[in-house]
Length: 432
Image 1: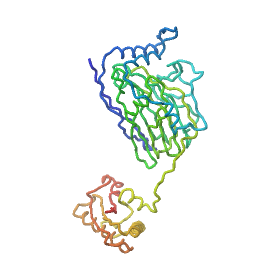
Image 2: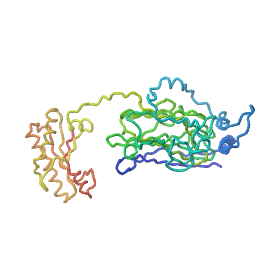
Image 3: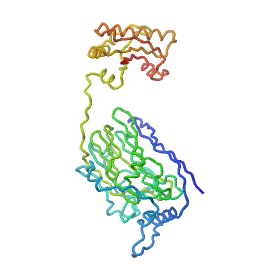
């Protein structure tokens, strides 16, 4: 029988430092048909035997360890495009920071114990194991972070590196295992989040399980960004049945992430991370394995951004959005009479318009919903006309201006609150 499993993942990027609210990011959604065959059974049995300590002997008399379990499916997997990983590493711009301040090779750690250089934040299935002939941290439905003296320990420039094992998924599993990497800014606000899926299905024709390596981030302006490298990119650069090198570089504002030295995330302007953690979970008992974790001060060289030097907020807004919106042009209540404190803002608009004498503008007046349309519609028109007159008095060519009253019909905020009504009472200068 075929088994259909549909999984929808949603992960949160906390965006407000004060209250740690979250943004939603779509990470992936794919239906997979599980096929019962001998390959899946062998993979599942081999992995379970390893974790249970039941591995036998191979023809050379050595322990038949996890290498056999992870590699026995190779014949059934179709040939992937050959990738020269040494060449990719040689050409990669990633370089480890110059000063290492955290390193865990797991040397000296006791098998079966919790790794001594880490803290447990949730779950309990974390231990040091032997896997593919090396020591590694096994995680299952658990969350950990480096054990550091300070809560916020990442410097302005840093690199983070670790290896994660790509494994065949357990037969009957819809998605099997994922590893989330969270990065927090000040006050534990989430500034970056990526979900990695180091699993593949050899008995599904070597296809991946449908969970994208989707990420979410926040820039200093509070904007939320999302993206993903794409399934084909991950299929090409993820080494199956092997360790994969994950690397991160952050330099003042620029965030870069690499899979086996191939850059898969490139964010030019992101909020400064101060700490990070790993969260592993799955719908099987196989677990996620990581090793060789290194943090270093220093990062990939920062490139200069050629930002336009705007002379005013008016110029910047019009250049970027085609309009300038302001709540600083004020009128007497229920009237179209400008308050004296409005003239500073109108002067800034006049300066821009005189600097750009061929640009034509629609001056829109907007009100809140207090009162009827019969009152607000003509009032907004009169207020727009009052602003046009003020601009003319400051030397702006009236030929380039047209007053339009919008009343309360185009709100930008909730009229149920005073704060929202204040935002709706505005003047917009729209370039035509």
